[in-house]
Length: 243
Image 1 (cartoon, rainbow, N blue to C red):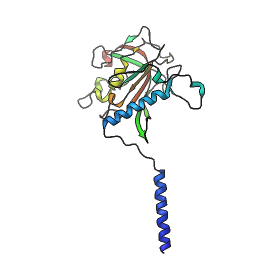
Image 2: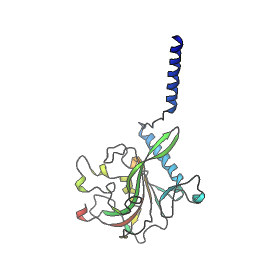
Image 3: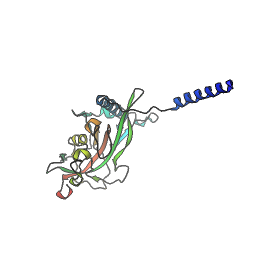
Image 4: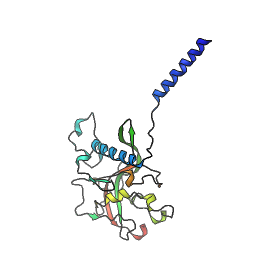
């Protein structure tokens, strides 16, 4: 009987040890907002080192097995500009309209700009796994480039119509301030045809502190970093019936 008990005990300990080895440690959001901001900064830098723009301006990850991208420049080598808010924008050479339409991204302005855009707007969480800080892909807010293939007018994260707003759900509940801030450094095209193939103008990277941080929002995305890869097909003063 004693031997049976010892066998059972040994088996239980072995099962517990194996289970512990198989467990995947779940990332725990740091309580200190400064740690979160540090994660974002480190992860964004690594993202810019690990990705480049292809011939149409799409963000692509460097391949470890395909040498065809060996001569491509990293995003971090394409003169990224960092704003005081932490927002980073990259303007792609040869892909800007000339002349272009100035963008007024102030939603409350009477002459704010309506935009029609081809865009891939992805969101990520900067995580720390055993000291390896990186952006982990979590999903997409908008993707016309791999989806419908048609330009989209005034995404809600850029402009929330008045009909959506209330005392408890102001513009800040919908709109991403860092995206609008970065977009001011670009110009839009003047009514490119929808059939025009995308030639993306650049990239805007918005760390969580310049997005929703830890505030409630329409998308349920807290502590999230956003990456926008886009072209503005048309920019015009927003008509009254689209406000």
